[in-house]
Image (cartoon, rainbow, N blue to C red; front, side, top):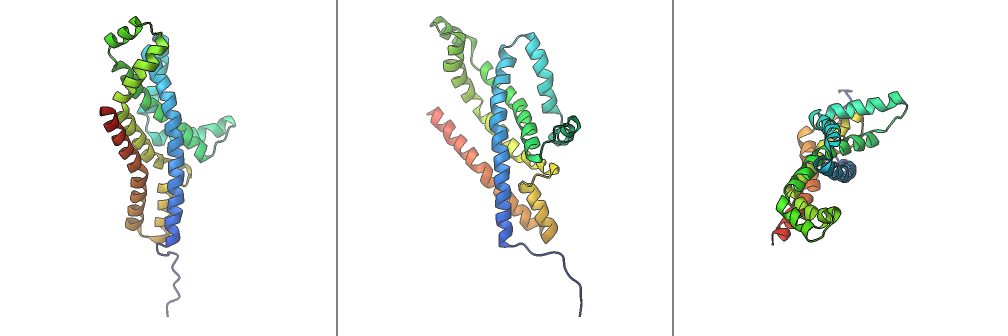
Length: 220
């Protein structure tokens, strides 16, 4: 009779709940990063469009840095840099910080393109009606420009949601990290990755579907 004891166990119902909790953490870190990054990106996009040479020459290289350096490298460097200066951040805070800056760098170009999409004749017409610069931005440029680039923003948001899986390298137990833990325990990678893919689809599909309906409403 064999006395071998197996350290592995099969996939259980409780594991689905474990993955659902991890999916919730994925949704949380993604939502916070997208909201913060979008707000910062809109401001930076306006600065890149309306700012002087000093603003553009200062802000441009910084944004290019976050767009060019792989996100995984950014996460590891920032997570290990803060303890050096005496300000240790947990994986969640570090992930939000880096993902927000990464989102802002991407949204900056989207917001800038939205402003540029509003033609100069239309802006001159609004100013000729007595609108101030800020009234022109609020009632003409932003409503038209942001609608024009809304699909691009949705693409950025969905990309950031998927890229949030890279925060797992910091030890944050989001959906991908939870899947890795379960694969190690159950040795059933196909099943667990299929469930993880279903969770990612469930997180992404509502945003994609809502954006599609919103675009159809605007078109009508």
